[in-house]
Amino acid sequence: MYHKFQISGKVFMAFGLKMKILITVLFSCVLIWSTMLLSSSNNNFKDHFLDDTTSDSKETPRDTLLGGLLTADFDEGSCLSRYHKSFLYRQPSPYKPSEYLVSKLRSYERLHKRCGPDTNAYKKATENLVRDENYASKSVGECRYIAWVAGYGLGNRMLTLASVFLYALLTERIILVDNRKDVNDILCEPFPGTSWLLPLDFPLMNYTYAYSYNKEYPRCYGTMVKNNTINSTSIPHHLYLHNLHDSRDEDKMFFCEKDQSLINKVPWLIIQANVYFVPSLWFNPTFQPELMKLFPQKDTVFHHLARYLFHPTNQVWGMITRHYHAHLARADETLGIQIRVFRKDAGYFQHVMDQIVSCTQREKLLPELAAQEETQANMTYTPKVKAVLVTSLYPEYSDNLKNIFWERPSSTGEIIEVSQPSGERVQQTDKKLHDQKALAEMYLLSLTDNIVTSAWSTFGYVSYSIGGLKPWLLHTPRGNKTPDPPCVRSTSMEPCYLTPPSHGCDADWGKNSGKIFPFVKSCEDVVYSGLKLHDEL
Image 1 (cartoon, helix red, strand yellow):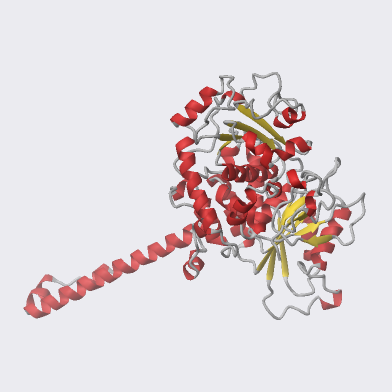
Image 2 (cartoon, rainbow, N blue to C red):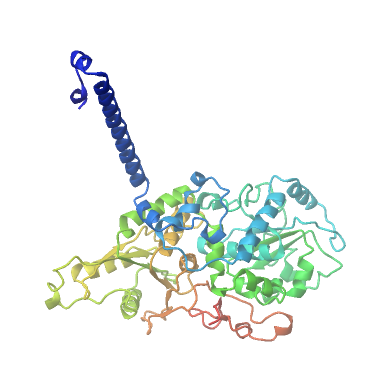
């Protein structure tokens, strides 16, 4: 094009001064306009290439800090999911964190920075561990710790991490996370300017004792209570809290007021858990007013804590975004189905497949199939697309669901597109790639509009609660028979505490734990033993 703007020297010299100035101005304007047009086009291309959802986010501004849950003190590129996950793909959560929770989180971050790893306070606290001192009359100072020991599957770990962190908030302790597993490969650091990873040289993780961490460990709090070997005049430098599915009531009741009067004096707590014990914290009359201020809407505890604590690493975030854009982004509606079969001979079972179809069709989550004579009836318009995300160790469930809606049309004319990110057949906890895939699938499920999950599944609990979704819970089949009804809609988005204490604290000692408060009720999927937080209606 350049030759079109060339003017021969002779012709140009023949023009008068005014004409020369006019030509020069016009030529300069054309060059500037062309440069601006190319720059704008290039920027638009880059924006579209980086994220094809940015146009939507410009039309609907999103709150990247989630109502103040998050601080802006992190480098965005080091952990893309922290500021992007809800900002890019979801409508803003209708559940806003309380101002008190936001203030408490900022205070905790400052405390963690003063007491965390690589501080003089931490160095002094660990040095004191090798001295067998009685802390009954000693001042511990502001830096007291609770170290979380990793165990069991990823769903259990995330539920217990949130539980332990809430306990740390309530008791002003520093949470430190066992770093011998793959936590650092799947989750970003949650606290700015410091680390939550327990240093690998921490003395009590060397297992130099005769026992590993279990009920027989010498400093197991429940065992010491049972044997009357701990009291207000004999406080050790550390205690082990055993809160697993096989815990005794002496283990589970550590949060009670009279127990806390002893435990508060102990500088170091080691906790191993595989259950979401948050509902029981409300039984402590000292904790309850604080919990009311932190979570005025009681069934939002895990939703807020998980969105604050858990941010997938960039590698996991890549898995999430790739599957989302390929299979979910363009759908008119999305449905998540999480399938876990709790049997020794777990695998594909027809009665489980029938249960999934029965639940989703009965609850109008998926359409019925059209009769054969209706096959051509819905071809006169562009049909809606419903994307169904299936997560299971077994790919046969998604394959069969896909075939159902491929072989015959739906009665509504909707196109049902089924996808399953992985089907590994065997749970492989602590294998890096397996756990990364598991976390990616939890977050993908949390992005769906509606969700169906298996009873008792911690994987499902994490998924629907992060997403702020009230799930349909598939009843546990008895034998090889499809339950009727196949599922039930939960009235809460909180996870279930699968093995809670049978009674409450102190004054409520003999009272059924499911009947102490109207907002702590039985779980829909674990009716006779589980406890779950509900918002008071």
